[in-house]
Length: 96
Image 1 (cartoon, one colour):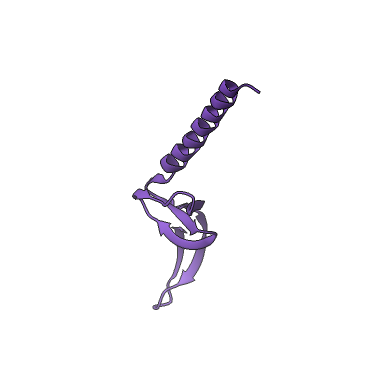
Image 2 (image 1 turned 45 degrees about the vertical axis):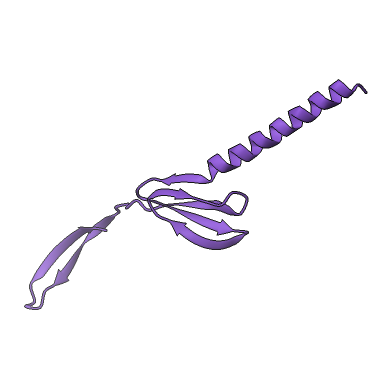
């Protein structure tokens, strides 16, 4: 094997390694949108919950494992008849 070919192959591997490290550092910067929470694990164990805003994580140590959607969902509640304190029958309807 030629020394020049070995040298260029090692340069390619070093370049790929640094590219991988760069990607990991870029992915450690997180911007959490409103109405969302990110669950972070440090070394496989729960560490914290990220609320809305800009956050930085430790590469190779911290990992976002779940994105919790905090948006409110409305459901219809069927009308119900009930009695008030003075025995008047009323029908109530609500959205929960």
